[in-house]
Length: 264
Ligand SMILES: [Zn+2]
Image: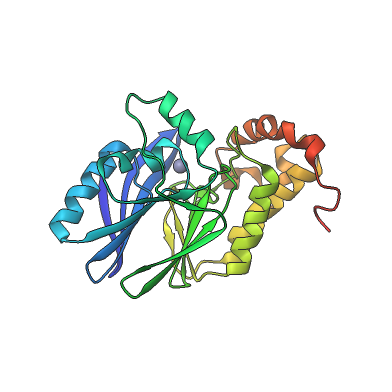
């Protein structure tokens, strides 16, 4: 487990993972302001344990945990805390899947987000947006209007290659697309990735247009298009491209649900 001080208010806790020869980080972030903190995801169980001890050592009172979505690498660590959890009101399906695959019971959210929720950590303003994409229960967090925690709606490997958008089996591709437009509208200065770095003064045009293009091509083709036609650059610039086949399969159920005016 690696502890990275991002700035005087932000700490990244991360581990390195590997899948199909692709390396990527899995992170949880602590934002703190004058002795109060909010945890953006909790990582795996062991990560939660490590963070809890670290908070005690730093004497930081944890006010909330935001679970950006119910997958084990984001929600499992919350089991070790009794801090209130903020989650999407669409949490149930994915929480059930988590519980079915783990010997312990995941914690349900205590505070539900049905559109947007604003909380304070000392004088800092924390805006939590409902951002379905990778899963229907997605949340993103905007800190003081500058730092946007995007969770798994943007993914990157350790070689800074884009991992193409990943629609899990419960995901709605139209929602993912709309969430990318919301990110663009929020226009943050910096981006915080779970599976990737903190990008200061991020190139938003690059980050968002790559994903928007992919999703737009995929949706317009009724999810049948070849991978290369969904990518702006050559395929070698992207990681985990095998996800494309999974996306096609997972999105298929939305073919007949396509709103006719979606791209107007
Ligand atoms: Zn993840």
